[in-house]
Structure formats: C-alpha cells, structure tokens
Length: 243
Image 1 (tube, rainbow, N blue to C red):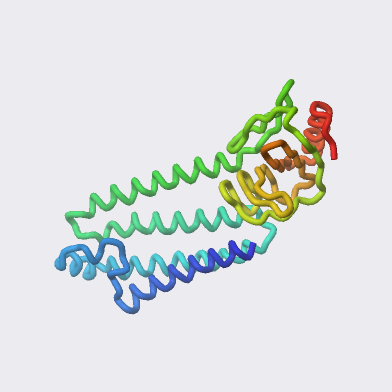
Image 2: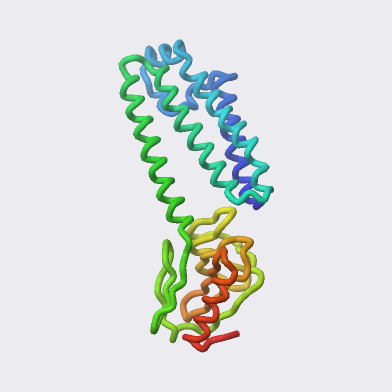
C-alpha cells in the first residue's frame, strides 16, 4: 500500500514540476517535439497559448491525482483503478482539447492523432481491466483441475503434493507478472514463505485455497467463501492430498 502511495506521489510531483517549469519558467522545451519545431512554428504556438495550456493541463492532472490519493487508505476497492482512469481521461482528453491551439495547417492532423491515441488507449485499458476482473473459476475434471481466465491453466492431480485451506493470506511481497490491484491479485507474485506463486486472489475474502504442485504454488479464492470451501473439498476428494 505504501509503495503504491509513494509511486503515485512521485507521479504527482513530476507532473507538478514539469507543469510549473512550463508555466512559470517558460521551459517550453519540456514539451515533446516543441524544441524540434521550426522557430516560426514555436512562436505561433506560444502566441496561441499552446505551451501555457499544456503546463496547466499537467498541473491540473497532478492536483486531481493528489485529491484522489487518500482513496488508497479507504475501504473503497477500486481506488487505483479510479486514479488511473482519471489520469488517462484528463491527459488524453486534454491533449485532444489542446489541438485547437495548434498552428492551423497542423490542427486537423493533431486532432486525428490525439483522438486516435485516446481511442486505442481506452480500448487497450478496457480489455486489460476486463480480463483482469474476470473471476477465476476452478473446475474439477476426471484427471485434472482447471483454473479459467487469464493466467489460468490445467494441472494433473498426480502432480499435487499439498492442498490446504487458509484463513489468512500470506504476505504478498512483489508482483513479477500479473495484475496487482487494490481489490485483487492475479498472476505471478512472490509470497512470503512460499516463494514464486500463482495467485487468483480477491483480497479480504477468506478463506484462501492453497494448492502445491510439483512445479507451482497456487493460491485461489472466490468472493463466496462457501465456493472456496467447495473447491477445497472437491480437490481433496479427487487428489487425496490434505495438510
């Protein structure tokens, strides 16, 4: 939690410093591609107020993120997602708006590029969050069990060495490849006492099913506690492995 807080605080400070440099110190070279433009284009952009508005956009985005930062310390489960969404909307929407202050001969192209980037970015984020928030299901087959969704796979019962139902989730130390959100952890993480592990975890929803195979440490649960318990009993029945 604190690591996420400091990372986001650093993003806020970077936006504030760059925005302040542009607005107060006229450090227009901080704006991407501004320095490489011909002198006459730079002067026209300054006359149109493009650099100043860019700086104000960065400052405004930083202040909005700063206001949302305390959400991390509330029970609200989607604080990080709201913060990311706000940043993306403000920045991409802002750059579309700034296209009206481009030089006339490049204004249409700027609208097309900024709008296209926004559409692609929103589409990409939608897919990422949609896949990330899909609930993982554990299905017991004749010789294997399967976990559905992103990072899901199939494992043979003969490779199971331990099945345990935990009331508390061990400390998750670091994400190596996956979704590490405030409300869930899905993918590859390092877990204290277990090492590299595959997680399909809704935080704050005990119990947690731990499955150890020859190759993997797997943690999975459902928002429905009874469902998690049912998975446990089904695996015990099929594999005969119990702690």
